[in-house]
Image (cartoon, one colour):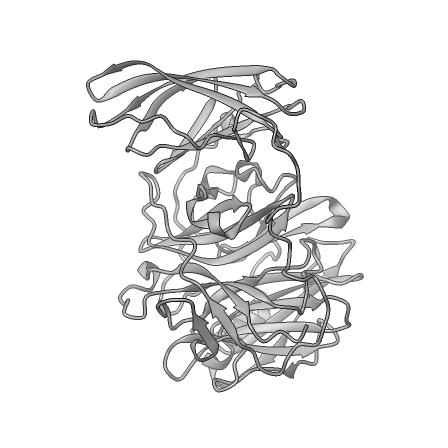
Length: 473
């Protein structure tokens, strides 16, 4: 989370009213569905429509229908459902009385909407609980559905890295309530056949969080952005998320910064409105951080667990990496024994955005920390250790031999960024051990137009994917 030359310690005092309609039951997958969409009447600048949904799969206890408008239509009123709209993307969920859909059963709702009187085409991309509605039950066969990692294998990490990057995949999607300049600081897990991405949203006024999901990275740009200020997470300064499943409690955790190290939980990662209100890991900033932070900022909280303990890392934009710990049994409570895990007299060498991962099939851990190069551009350094507590040995940690920097990345087309900044590895699993395969690493990162300048919060950060090209396995 990049707070350089910014003032983000002031948390916006914006009142948030969370309506009961924002809380929806867990939604199962729908193997097949059919949708009928019909315009019932039209008038100057407006029209009415009826939508019927038939469940062709197994019984559902709740449903969520999504689609996108293509001609600027905007829903103004809807009945027999609860709707949200972000730009062209629409989501309608069941009410308390019509959530159950047996196999072959249907439900319907209606709405009024505005339009431009020029064209009013019907949507064509309806999906029920994430499954595209084709009017039939799709045959389940092995397809190009992405695996958690390209190989899932094991092997040695190289002493130097080469990467390939495509263009930006995920960009801001502002709407009437979210004037967004940047999407940044991503966390990603692969679960239940879908990629789930959490990220910061930023503009000159501050930060909050966004969620999107998709089955294939080719769909990432079209995925609906669902803003977490519409959940109990609320408005105000929330940034730099990290998502993982804490298996001992059967809960998903979303860790983020609020001026403190905070977290929310849910049992349904696919329901962005189900996250709990923020809670803090610490009663206040630990003394050792307060004594060493100087004119930096306390940022980028990161949790990883082994079989006995959980560890919370954080940075201070002043050359220090901190680590606290508690037991797995006591998590998320009891983080104490905060120490300086690593430090550098040159604050730019150890700036922020630390990631720690377990290497699959080994007793080795990988540490990544974002640095600022002599050219002012962001890049990543790397270390390894046989324990989360260190000691850490440099792997690829210089500007000439970085973990990931513009000088070891080949772009598919135009080199659209010179910054390889805050991101996360695509993991081999999704639990609290943060395990990754060492084979053909992939890293979701933020970059920006090299010519962009001005207010840091307004810089046009976008998300793209690095793929390692010199894997040893």
